[in-house]
Image (cartoon, rainbow, N blue to C red; front, side, top):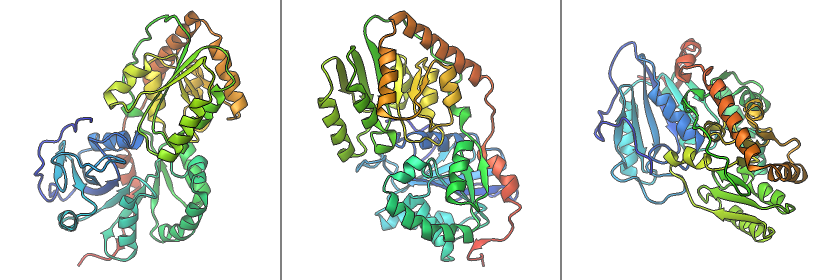
Length: 412
């Protein structure tokens, strides 16, 4: 389990500092540190908290346990933990009335200038939006970061249910005049395809990408070594990767790391693994703590990641920062960087096309694979030197503070 940085006390005060010029943000995120199973959004939200400008203070509401876990974090349930000078995190036990009472006491004790929601579907977004629509909560503005949930691939999972929900929810969100935070121009397009009326702010999380790449080690003798690191869910499209390995006739090693998020999907993966030829060795190697991700990538020739869509794709940057080229779909913001870093964008994303690319990789010599990893290091280093700094909430305040009417029930 990852450590929780910059948390000075589990007994933070009920309200943040009462400074008249302070812009107060109430944020929600279904999973947060010390958990890590939520993947990239956890890192994005952590970056927002850790780079807050001096005029913004933020209270984050999150779960008291990691994604898919029944065990709460030790000592954090129903506590409000300081994180640096400008932020605090409240760990909610969703089934505990006492935890809700403690949370509501904190929320009602202060003015809320901005409600910042890091999901469209999560109960941690549905509850506050419903309270706002019912007049039980008063805020000046609402900013929603869908975190990839509006990509075509994501909307294709349980499509019918999401279509029905969006038909109703779109009217609610439009009436509340919410603004949207997209992590890339690609995600902005996805938001507008679903909500044509949306006003979208684009700000990525490039600033959390590792500052310096890890140089490659090698050349390493032996067959092509592929790795997958991520959540084992339909969105990550691991079944396509396994199906594409079946026709290969050269030796290939493929290691899989990640939480077993969807047991039914993992059963499909296991069936495909059992059907692979003897020359293809696949191993599931469990979950990885965040600090082990880059060292693990550094041990492989390529990251096999035929994702159905990423709004940002932190794991791609982690792979490239470890000098590990990426074999990926064209459904991320990083296609140009991946290709510059000796990676492969699979177009179209079909079994046959992916098989052909993997066959070509398997034919390369250890020296050729090492040279490609050196190019990945060079390309990442050049990209990282041009990354801008900044905080999405700092960018948002200028636009959002112009929105003077209160949403919800006016304060008395």
